[in-house]
Length: 160
Image (cartoon, rainbow, N blue to C red; front, side):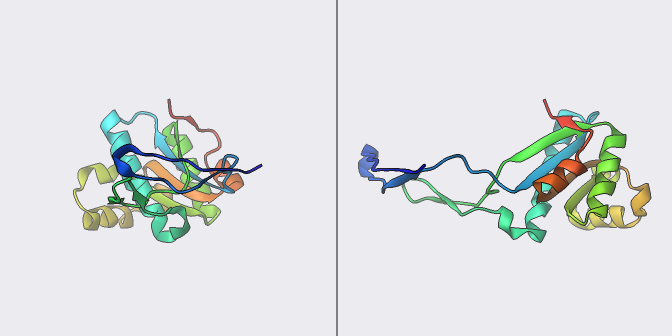
């Protein structure tokens, strides 16, 4: 059920337009990041940032509209939906990587070798040097239909 109401915000002389209230949005897709459970906090944050940065390159529909504040300052667009963060053992992450590749879903990978590099060129060379079945993924990012992503991260648990 939709309710239409007019909201006025008079702070700093700004008026907001009419607002539409709707039920919560439920997406038929999912964005998930799966991290190896033994990573240090800084590594978890760094790996997550790198993994999600690649998802929109293959699936631009994951990006929403630019943000603006009441003063019309424009901010960059962000994902249109939440990112779910999971963790698991190295075996769980490796299995998820294989599942994502087998299901041909949008997947980004961060391998242990990337902690020793400092730029995109060296990162790509480090991944390129290792056959897929011998990669040591410490994290994967996936985007796809809800049921496919659920199957990819099966066995992982939500990050605390």
